Each structure stands twice: as structure tokens, then as C-alpha cells.
Length: 283
Ligand SMILES: *[C@@H]1O[C@H](CO)[C@@H](O)[C@H](O)[C@H]1NC(C)=O
Ligand SMILES: *[C@@H]1O[C@H](CO)[C@@H](O)[C@H](O)[C@H]1NC(C)=O
Ligand SMILES: *[C@@H]1O[C@H](CO)[C@@H](O)[C@H](O)[C@H]1NC(C)=O
Ligand SMILES: *[C@@H]1O[C@H](CO)[C@@H](O)[C@H](O)[C@H]1NC(C)=O
Ligand SMILES: *[C@@H]1O[C@H](CO)[C@@H](O)[C@H](O)[C@H]1NC(C)=O
Ligand SMILES: *[C@@H]1O[C@H](CO)[C@@H](O)[C@H](O)[C@H]1NC(C)=O
Image (cartoon, rainbow, N blue to C red; front, side):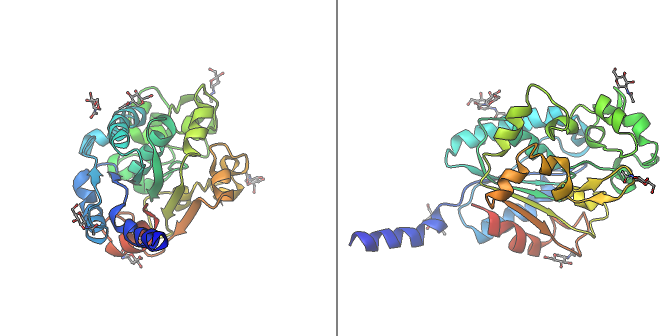
């Protein structure tokens, strides 16, 4: 009798116990762009609560990364405290970098699965992304704007990572070198221990993205000083386990997913991406 009851419980419980999902949109868009994902999750996982962040839409998505991390993070902390069993967090493009910032900064945000959907996790150095916002700017000279006090007042400047101007990047960038524990700060230890609380870290990207440059940045790969891409496993952030990627990997919690044939503006519009690469990882 007891065994039967237990089996029945295991059989039924997955349907009733999907954890809530929080969605964070990309730059120059808003919650509307994430609605297909929200609807599909609710269609396939009925009764799942989906929170679709509607802060920092459109032009305000260019506000600084720290400001967005701290503001959206308060919302996510509130949501997380209402769901002590844990939440799923999905961030698309810039939203995936904001999401990671939130996980690493807020001890009261308790994320089971974090999915980074084509996000510039190791930074960005390419015209594709730049021209979404700054059509006239060349990637070769963008550092002159971004690596200044004024340039750091935009989100894009906060993760602009010019391989030819690393000393300036280290001097001026207030976000990415810190959140990646490339530069030490009083938060270094917390940034790592908070990320290590994840049950699952899923990094999705692909070679036909055409906006995230290099596309491997979506999986913590990046350019060396000669613009040759060095993949994640050969990067100091992984080798020296700076933020916990290697530890998560050793425990089987890191999932690196490469999907060809998807343009940057299709990831969040493509139902098969949700079905094949998001739903299977949700808790
Ligand atoms: C959804 O919730 C309702 C009401 O709580 C419940 O009756 C129904 O069985 C649930 N559906 C699934 C698929 O879990
Ligand atoms: C979070 O919850 C607190 C306390 O319940 C509330 O005062 C605050 O307004 C909420 N903040 C947000 C951003 O929802
Ligand atoms: C969550 O933690 C942050 C930072 O420690 C704090 O500012 C915030 O008030 C907390 N939020 C809630 C809802 O407790
Ligand atoms: C970086 O800052 C240090 C200390 O202020 C300064 O000595 C150095 O020249 C700066 N380097 C660059 C490339 O700006
Ligand atoms: C860059 O290329 C030059 C010339 O081929 C080479 O000497 C140098 O070691 C390379 N640097 C890096 C970081 O790969
Ligand atoms: C949708 O995603 C699939 C992979 O799941 C990919 O093969 C296909 O090319 C994508 N379609 C578009 C329009 O991006």
C-alpha cells in the first residue's frame, strides 16, 4: 500500500510541481518579445507560473547593467521568496547577462535552472550588435567611447570587450570584468559562491547567430589578443574556476548547447528552440 502510494506520487508530481519561470528580455525590446516562450511553456507545462519582466524596455534597456541587475533583481528576489522551492530563470541576449548578474549578486534569489539564451557572457566585440544601437560607430574605435566615464553609462559599454584594448577595458569597465571575477573586488567570493548554488546552468548559442560576436561568447569563449577565438575550456575564467564554471561542469551541472541555423533574432521566436532546448532543462 505504502509503495503504491509512493509510486503514484512520483508519477503525478512532475505535472503539478513545475517551478515558476522568470523571463528577462534583450536590449531594445521588451516583455512582448518573450511572450511566445511564456505561452509555449504554459501550453506544454500547464499551471506553470511565468513572470515576464517588463522593466527596462526599449531605450531604457540601455541603462547601465548594474542599475538593471539591482532593480530587476529586487523583483526576482520577491518572486523567489514567494517560491522557496526555487525558480527557473531564462535570459535572452543582454537579458541573460543581467540574469547572471542577479544570480551572482542576490543571495536571496534561489535559482534551480538558469538558461542563458544567446547572451554575450564573455563580452561583445562586433559591428552586428553595435549597430543595433550605435549605427555610425566602428567596432575598431568604439573603445574610445565605451572606455570612458560617459561610455560606461550604457549597458553595451558595460560589456564591450575589445581584445586590442584590454588595459583600458580593465581600467574603465565597471561591470563585466567584475562579474566575471577577472578583476578582484570585495564581491569576488560572493559572485562565485552564489553562482555555485545553481542546479543547472545552460549556455545556448550558435554559429549562425550573426549578432553576438564572437558567437562563442554565449558559452564563455572569446577572442585572444589576435581575434582568434579561444573556447571556454581554455579560458582563465574556466581553467582557474573563477566564477565556478569548472566546478559546475565537474558535477554535471553545466550544459553547453550549440544550435546551428539560428539567427540572433530567432532564438526567442522559434518554437522548436523552446521545445528542444528550453523545456527539457526546466525544473
Ligand atoms: C492545474 O491546476 C488545476 C487546479 O489547481 C488542477 O485541477 C489541474 O489538475 C492542474 N493541471 C495539471 C496538468 O497539473
Ligand atoms: C518586494 O516586496 C516588498 C515586501 O513585500 C515590497 O515592499 C516591495 O515593494 C517589493 N518590491 C518589488 C520590486 O516588487
Ligand atoms: C534581497 O537581498 C537584497 C540584497 O541583499 C536586498 O537588498 C533585498 O531587500 C532583499 N529582498 C527581499 C525581498 O528580501
Ligand atoms: C590605467 O589606470 C592606471 C591607474 O590609474 C594608469 O596608471 C594607467 O596608465 C591606465 N592605463 C590605461 C591604458 O589607461
Ligand atoms: C598574435 O600573432 C602574432 C604574430 O603572428 C604572434 O607573434 C602572437 O603570439 C599572437 N598573439 C596571441 C595572443 O596569439
Ligand atoms: C529553429 O530552430 C531549429 C533548431 O531547433 C533550427 O534548425 C531552425 O533553423 C530554426 N529556424 C529559424 C527560422 O531560425
